[in-house]
Image (tube, rainbow, N blue to C red):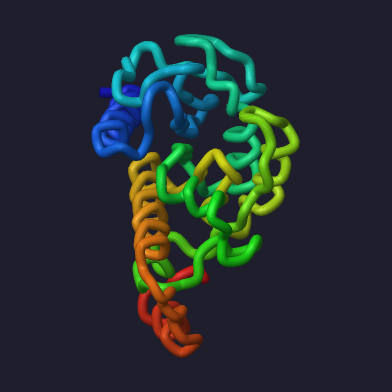
Length: 212
């Protein structure tokens, strides 16, 4: 199996897993991966639970659609992230319930949507900023994410959900799932838990190399 074929299978496996567990519904969400000669991205209006490896859209390094289904309308967003974060090889965007609910209820701070309340949130996700509401596919939203993509692992779109980038599609999915779980914990806990102390966060940095 070629590396591209393996990545095509990985995208479909992750998509089916996210869909089966309710991280995305209907035809919402998209996934992409960086290749040496361009990018793979899920087709526009595709259901992540029913992806076909052969039908994933492929675009070249100049952004030209060269094979598969029509690329997702968020292609510009994905391209901007990859250019701003050279080490990233996979991106996952969903409309995850608790993270969307968080934007409706009110995030902790615009530059950090959730306080650091669990060690794995600090280790696997890090600081996540809020991107103010814009229509799906808006180029300005893509530009705002690209502006921070080199500093963080993800961003949260108001009323739309998270986009997370990592060294592979699988790792992006793992980080997104950790972020969604943290939002669920935060929304269900009354009174709200205190953030981890600066000392606790520094220990996670020193021990595990946490980027926070």
